[in-house]
Image 1 (spheres, rainbow, N blue to C red):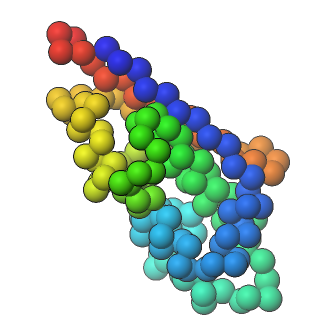
Image 2 (tube, rainbow, N blue to C red; image 1 turned 60 degrees about the vertical axis):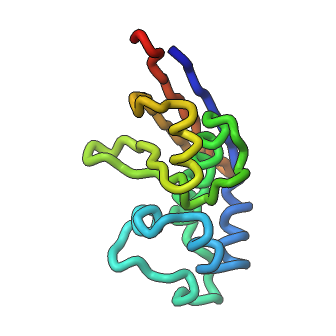
Image 3 (tube, rainbow, N blue to C red; image 1 turned 90 degrees about the horizontal axis):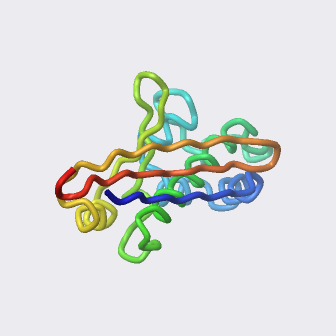
Length: 148
């Protein structure tokens, strides 16, 4: 059995600044459409460029985007690869009907996961939280051994 662990913390104002400075280009580069919808909490998903530029991004929306950022970073740290060959949208956070977050992998992240877990039996757990100016996430994967 192998245990993978990653954690990350990010200042929410840093992500809010990126949202306000780079707009929809930043969002599309980092977050999948499903993550965007979850962060905005509405459908259809608005674009940040359609927001009133005279008003800052709502604090709660920025917190959700920051939480996803920390979760993606924690997952990548658990994989042990850094971002080489992996795009931010190759790692996403999906909410189960219960609300529990689970990582999803595509592209380069999926390829790296297959190297670590060729049997596709890893059990992932993901947790993220917000406190004051910070969002933090921890990702854990348990990969059974050949004989498990």
